Image 1: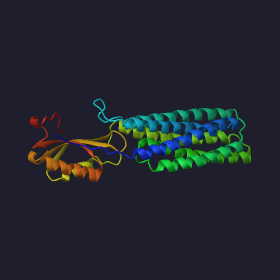
Image 2: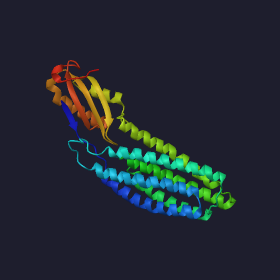
Image 3: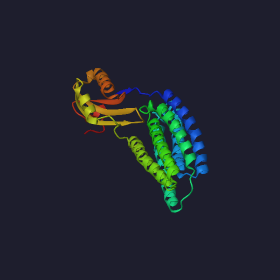
Image 4: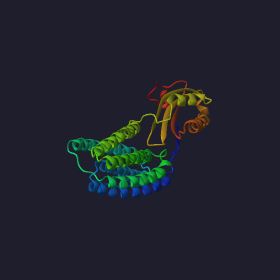
Length: 302
């Protein structure tokens, strides 16, 4: 039995610092936007504030997941707590659906019962939102490839940025035309903009939880890489999955001509997997002459 147990860790310290700064900015503006939505009577601002609330939750959960993810592995959790990141991302996606659903229902009711809106207040708050979201996006952009949670937070802040643009345009139209039905219309547009991003985040999280092949990894290409290593005659029982973002795992049975050469072959295989597919954690079992030799402890074969 040969196993490579080297984990690839992202720059969690950098991501954590970015998340803390983005969280402070987002919490501050969330409070401002909620207060402004009641003072101005704008559902669009409330819709954007609701989405901002999920940003706050996403950032807080991401930080919580990073903290727990630093805990060392133990006998009960051999991979530690890194999968909490994926669970947090799924929870974040569910929050997006709930907020969008509430806004859609409230917007439909507002069409039937129009309410007055302070367009000047909308314009001021939306302009502030653009600045806050632009700063948060800049902070999170560099870490979005390191973590699914950071990516989810980045996508939400990006959607919030566009939401602020929509509120700004809606406030300007109301100010010029006096037509308050524009406000619930903008709220609906923001909600519909949020839903696809929530769905994409939920799909990505579910894919990891269902132990699907990591994004960007081609199983057939990995198999061909294994077969290209001198001494490997066949590949059986190949599985590729991930614990969390950036931590792909692999297990396989490799048929080789001579068990005496296994250590040298294993070193070449591990090097090829790391260099060509960025897979640093591989559990590989040698087989001599066929996939079902009882002496090697095989219980399955293709």
